[in-house]
Length: 549
Image 1 (cartoon, rainbow, N blue to C red):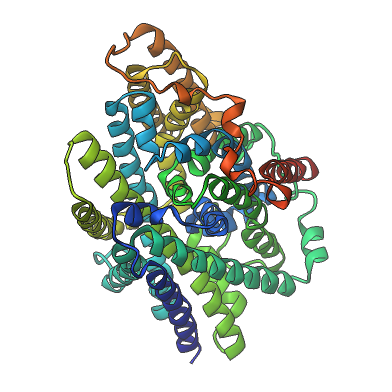
Image 2: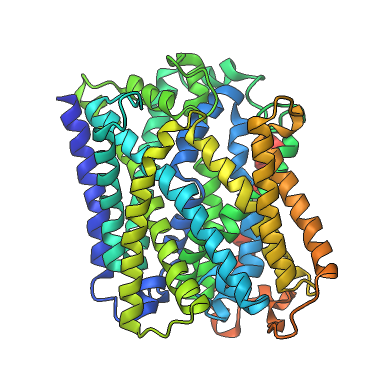
């Protein structure tokens, strides 16, 4: 009975997100801008939900729950550093992107550097979205669904567990159905409802876990002072404070300011004000969302969840959720169904956004840009749908490969991000703030930076003797980012610039770029003042770091 209640709650809530997405997109697929950029009609709150939900994805939720149990609230720093990237996104990137009607972050690199830079970044982004976002999200979604409905233990001893694979396929179909048909509009509005499900389910989980652990005071007393500090020693084996700073400037910056996942949704906003306020509001939501995993992770110390004694352990996190709620009491079973629905809603939001981002990069940046296809509007939409279907099919087929990864999906995502994120973050920052950089130096940096990240990962994974400071993935991301910055400077002076490069002088950042255009200043007055909301996000974020240091 309890299992039926759980599955019923999950089915109703997730079905609602699909219906809302399809309803929002009905009759809005006439031109490619409708399909790829939601007709540039999204209000600021939908953008905010996207920024928050796609910056703190499912693998972070479950992974950080286990990480919080081990290291304490320092795990929240992986989300609370997002204000750095969001500040640059709202003050430098989005004004240019919106005013120039950029269709993707890769297109910007063509205007600033060269068509080859655009193509390379698009290919790297597709690789990251496929291997670093879609595959782990589908894996976790399929695993959660198989656990909730069948209590299936995952093991490769007898080959691929086919019930698990069927659950992965079901999640893939449910996540991509509305987006393939309705495009970005369906994905954005469906994602907004999915975000609300995540917030409600996560809040219920945090409240129930904290209550069962004896209340907030008891949880704090049990964890103080060992696990209530946000900044850990520089010699810490998982999250040294130096690594946390490096994460905010590299992987965190990539996630919140450069990744097509977030940027595509911002580009679908109905105005520059909506895009920028949505990004700032998303940053404010990111200050609250970590409570979803921080409070339960701290409460786990009081409750002593069975098996949750390892770092980055998604399986133990889910087992603990089941232990907290149980299946005997119908009300508790409904609560567990709500939390499971929240987890799967986070999967659906991530998968839908990633599939659409890959489709946009492939159709507009690779086919239209690099391959110079001259498709009609209807052909562009058809190509977008075909590429979406191929993407979700390929990701589904690749998902079982993660059964062989035994270090936690959160760890896997961080490792992939530490290879691709830092050089991409460096190239985007330099594009706006250093006019001497050129296309050939940007291309060389993207390639060399990814190679440095891959070599560092190989050294840590295979070498018998590794320096302790190099083991945390957040620290390696910083090393890769610093190496990429140095290499970009060297390449800029060593490699000759292509004389045929077209450089848009408007990409050089100035204070004027941060000021709203005249026709939007009325929206930015009073309570809509962007500077006020940015100051609130900045002060609140810095205050969190100071108070919890």
